[in-house]
Length: 137
Image 1 (cartoon, one colour):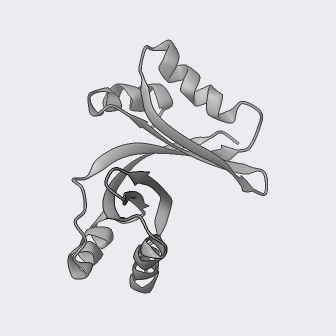
Image 2 (image 1 turned 135 degrees about the vertical axis):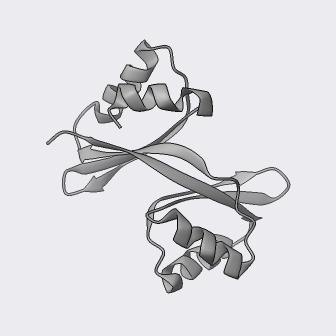
Image 3 (image 1 turned 90 degrees about the horizontal axis):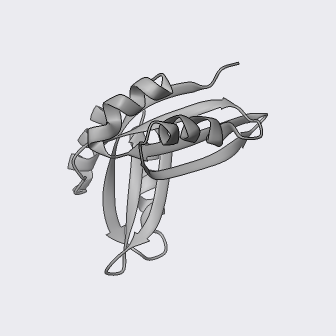
């Protein structure tokens, strides 16, 4: 089966970098029924952590953020790639962008079990349309 490449919107929230902060956000999402397609958390300057939230329904995320008092970033775009796991799965997509001279600003990939994998891939905003064409999104 061919990989599926989707255009996705995400936003991030910055929280204190201490135990339980990510869980607090994830539990609020769970209670509100906001499904995430991807979630990435990592430390940033000043004892804080950035949580990238890639929701199935961006409007539902924004409504919840308003209720919870979260300061979400402006909406941003990325690609979600899902498919059958195989040797070189991530390289196949990254090669398309590289050969076209497009730089990848970030990528995260993992096996999903049961022979599947997923990857979130980011490019500069000005390269998004061209990357979408190259990736077939």
